[in-house]
Image (cartoon, rainbow, N blue to C red):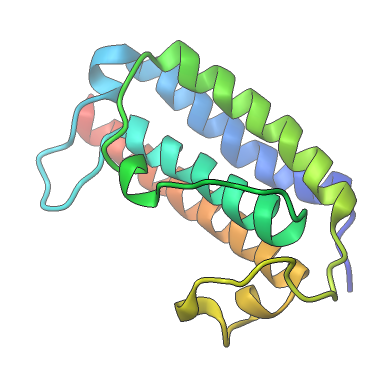
Length: 151
């Protein structure tokens, strides 16, 4: 079974649109605030991390683009919400382009991180794309809870 690019983009887009809406609702000050929980991330950092996931997993491992990712920096990122929402829109368009290069049953175009090498996410482009959606959905939910705490 294979999901169409349009259907995949619909699901991924719902998560990305939901994250952008939460950022807009929170505004600059709250989007850059950590909730008072151990190990919590700011909404800004959560969304920045999701953009890193898209860039690395879909851009590098699926589409074969050269990507320079600083995963640790994603979790300390901060800045204006408007600019991050614009980056979300650009990332959504890039995902559309990256899907055109995807061969779901083919191996990844670059090595997966070691902890994923022997998992479906690390064995095929389709598995990597499923991992992208998994991360987007998971972090969208995390962002909803984070927003509720920060209100």
